[in-house]
Length: 412
Image 1: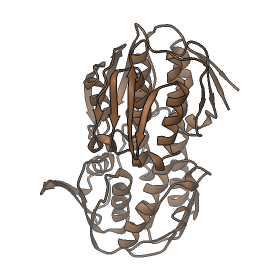
Image 2: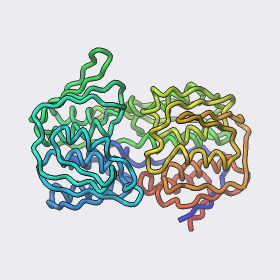
Image 3: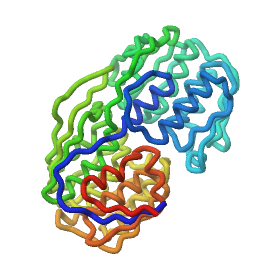
């Protein structure tokens, strides 16, 4: 399905977000009851696969396009001592899984891959009773996969984390009264979990997805005389580097009504049209900004001065090679940019820049497709985006929200 989008005028409104995908994935794997809300295809795939594995005893599990789902579920199932086969769609089947398979096998699991990629085969095994592992790179998916494996395998595990990555799993396990502790020692974050203590099943509140909110935050910043309220958005400190970067770029953005449930903070986000300034994005904060790098790189085009991104190698192994996809988007709007290995420099044209005759390639990647849609706000004519079906995986009401803000969308 392709999209033809015509921008609207200014707006003062609010939108409805899907539930936070990261928290919803973890709740799905642990089969926990949650609040109702909109969820994308990735969460639906994980819910079904987890239910089929645990409740129905099925061996062959299909995860669709869900990279988080297949990696976390592989860990969770590795501790059960049963046989499973996990597969996904064409896109997921091209994504590397060595990062989780190798340490899980060190833990005692029997996980095999197809040339480093799915399908993933799990054979019955007994995990070792005590295990210590230092993360080679910041990775919430690897960390969570190991913690979930240890939980089911009744293993005592220590995970050493040089840099903080998303900590939804730790927060959820603590809320579920697992024996989990976090210490800082020798400038390292250390997570200790005694898997012999099972979870206590509780209802989990899932706020709105901050990564989904980022696209409409960007839209408001780029639109003239506009204001947007986004209610009940998750503001976990390990997820909101995008917010902090935008504040440093002179964005008029704030949080209100901060609350907390099941160890997760959430709040209303209020954003207004702004004139942005470019800045340097150091590699140290990229792990907690990784999902927002595509839309942030688009905002950089309309900022005053240059924006420099360092250490973007992780973008190459997402749903698409996102570094390549970002370059494609930038080229289509005649942006000025340079790439050097895994670094990217964008020379901003300022707040008044517009473009025309844009036809965007989504690379079958939901975040790239949504970037193209948001860019329509600065086009002087309609823009085209090919293959927008992937947006359903994370943000099924994306176009509905866009339409409510005055945009005209033709899907065909």
